[in-house]
Image (cartoon, rainbow, N blue to C red; front, side):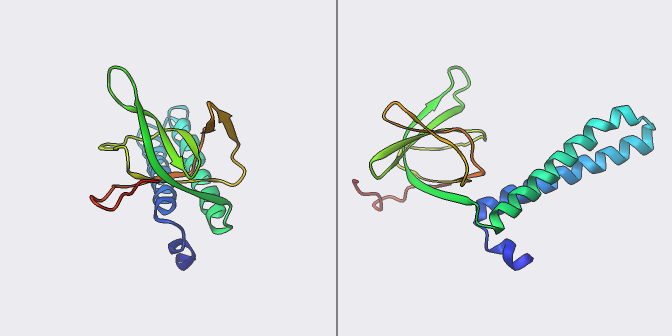
Length: 155
């Protein structure tokens, strides 16, 4: 099983481990609250979060093993940020002849135009046409590779 896990792309491995890890932490928090405070109602949200995250990590791991994901790679064309905090809201990725708009769910620092973006998404994920391009609303994992000076060409 470990060898099959190592065959997954690094970004998917990180997502699976993060979901399992946070799920285990919520499970430990559930046990601490139950044994220390003896309050089942206070601990139930922790149990629900733990269950959700562990099942979510298991589903992502299963989909990765079965190859039920699509890898999309492109060049960052534009970065759209929020007004006040300047958090990245959307990135626009150029792929061959089309542009993909992608909402960013995670904190990303130092993302620049010209960086290579790799997206892993479900093979069942709907892709919508929008403004002469495409919109992807959800993805499994996002990976960024910084542009190396002198390596990026036109096209």
